[in-house]
Image (cartoon, rainbow, N blue to C red; front, side, top):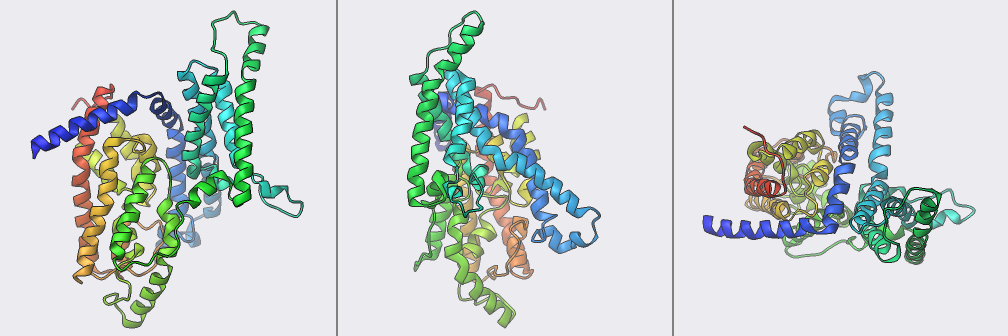
Length: 439
């Protein structure tokens, strides 16, 4: 067994090294490093705002914080401001930085390229519906300038980098005078015009199909309506597998888009049965997204990243990883995992992607096993999305202790799945010159 793992881990390290040597990955890695502080602060403000100061928040509903905390509305507004100026515009920062670093690798004008990327992201998210005289719609599609737009912004940054590589003159070490400044600006005209022309064309084409913009049209590819299946658990496992892969390459939240059509009927029917009979044993839909994925497959967010945090704190000696894990504890507690995704990073990391995909599947199978044999009732009660994930099944079954026991098993098993890959990621960090604790 050790021989098999040794051979597999060595191949995985080679793949990891191959990816990290590419110009594209290096540009993306530098981009993540710069946006990380904004991600951490934004995630912390989002966690507090959504769980403590929102009326639908888990802690607000339990402790009725809105009724007794002084200046609660002021604190909420401050958190909303922080969240808006960090997370809601993060895709524009990402487009600027990825274009800048991609272009730098080609020894072209990185500053003009960076601004081209940022402006290009605004073009892709221009709301053409705002042109109509009787419309009060916003000028830009704001929902796609935040986390949801990061994948498109990375692609845009790489695209801008190659356009500048092909269509702009190479930077020369010239004496800095007015002619150099003029020639620098003129040199950026052609690639800027090409990028704007292509992006405006894409925006116009997208508007002929829908009003969601290029990014919204991209996400619509992952929108599924109600799915009928005799073996629903297979469908749920596939969706979780698909969801983890997409999240692992930076496409945020596809399962959330799919979820509504799959689960609306089952949630209402299950809840009605439980209220009528006083128990969730025997509900008409014991297997659903809510009873399987929400309850057992997303501790800390997509990929069971709460287990990754614990695995890092238990088994990792990499100082940077431990710092990111500590910063991620509070957001992860309410199922927000952005600091981990961009800080380690998990995104585009071939080593961590494996347990990121496997862990939700294993955890859901454990939950399914106990529900199928009726050793545990399915979770049917609606809970805030900010409910700490290990408590989701327990509270969703109206406090059935077997659900808490199963959640504990799931957490332990998925931590054990992550630990060898965390250690392997340490080896990769050493190869790349990462720091380890001296202890």
